[in-house]
Image (cartoon, rainbow, N blue to C red; front, side):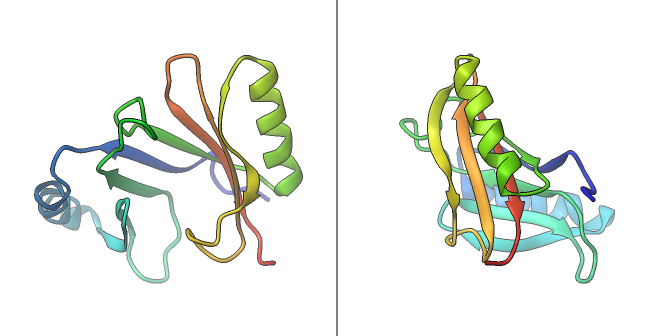
Length: 131
């Protein structure tokens, strides 16, 4: 059973270090902390042992993220749903930004597909099912 519609959201920032310091401080009173650092940015989430949506800040690459880093990841129930999302989005006029497949650079069992909507926003469907 799927727990949430949205898995994660990303915002593009101009200075990753400064924005990281800001969000470290601003989100702490809400019980959120920086839980992951990757080359693309920082992820925030609930404390240890709690599940929930991830919030990312990223320093976008203009060629990779034409919408300045805005990104929404929708939770899918399984890999077939990810594949169906990608096919439906492409049929509806999306631009491909990453065919369905495993993304081990994100985490084990991470399977996702990426498209750019008509306004250039990066939209993803994903599931996390161990291989």
